[in-house]
Length: 286
Image (cartoon, rainbow, N blue to C red; front, top):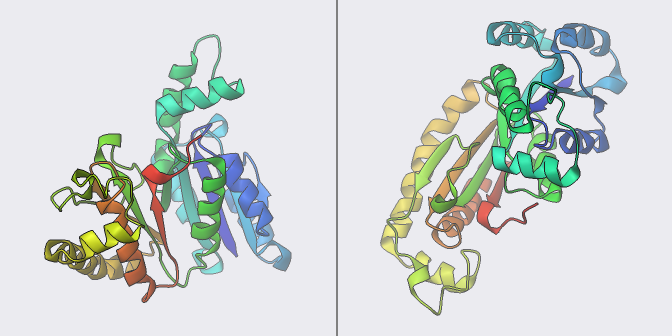
């Protein structure tokens, strides 16, 4: 049995993620109290048609502490199912914007709590799940379509036989990705931005690839990052980690980081079945 637990702050994309899994054949349950997970596993693990189950957990019915949640999730019969805990989040400003745009009511707003206070209170309530998540996705800069595609690739593509690796390029001037397991700074490498002829291109374009690919310091940076990741991936796998996100950052997230993320993706795709790349600053925003 495959069990996927999805949680996260309201407005971060939980419903979209659950709909993707439903389309992929998962039996989906929205807003399940976490205390009922044991009963759910017992009732469904013998049902062949319920071999894939996904549940979303909402802050409204979350009254447990970190230790209680950890005990509930890890006291389940692990020999009978594969568990993935996925946590979605976004920046406070973006969550405020999404609620304002849709005019939805936040589930924790009341006469005592304003919308900003409810967003912060929800973060506190969900911290116990965020702290034990196998995969964290920061949807701040994602469109709904990109989130759906990422969930499909990362979750449905991971069947427990291999670790899912994501190389993510980003620009430091826009902030470090919240969902990164490792962050590598490549701002010390030659910057194509300062060449007016190269500035309009990005790291996926041939002129940038030729510019960076011929530099020995770029090749050494790629080799060093690949060696570090390669050396430590076995420990992630032995610790039963299903996902790992490697963030590569330059100043604006258009040239150096994009190039290296693409190169590393190609390199590790030769060794692992589930390797993806995402360029945060080149993504379509909400």
